[in-house]
Length: 239
Image (cartoon, rainbow, N blue to C red; front, side, top):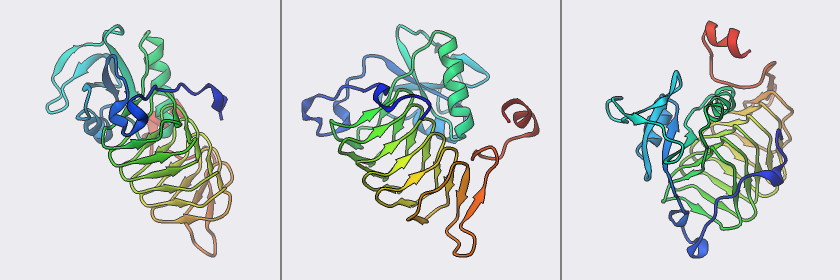
């Protein structure tokens, strides 16, 4: 991992940790990103809007994109609302360079065990179930109806809907898991790797590989790691 797992920022949970709705939120949350993911997250409780990545200072209204205010670090904290793993890290750095802080956003319909540690900039979506001494890194998204059972997940990961991560599994930084993927017990998914939708992983995946479950050729090497297709301008900037 890019940062030691023991340094992950932990959000306090009180009231017995029965639901994630018990997490103390002192400031209003702003979603960093302007795509479908960000606009959905902008409707989560305690969120007031989102910021376009081309202007991280102006808060936009989630329904129509109108400007509703200016980011104030004494009142607001940010959460990454971006799917591209390469962008998660980049935008978090840009946000912090402006003197703004990141926080953790957990939907009240998710269950989070009080022993769980979650890094700043990360989000947990509705009906996710995370228990045990699970550790989740920074700028990582755990999608709706996903389960993490005593697992370890790195920074800038994108875990989509209905994913199952079983005990002692490790996902390194910048991992993408497709809808319905299952990571079996003790499996390691390497940095920058991806698993296709609905596949079950029973063997370790090396860094920067795509797993698609084919018996003949289940792995495809990804030279620069996984991310959604980028434009020519994006490739020249981030590749």
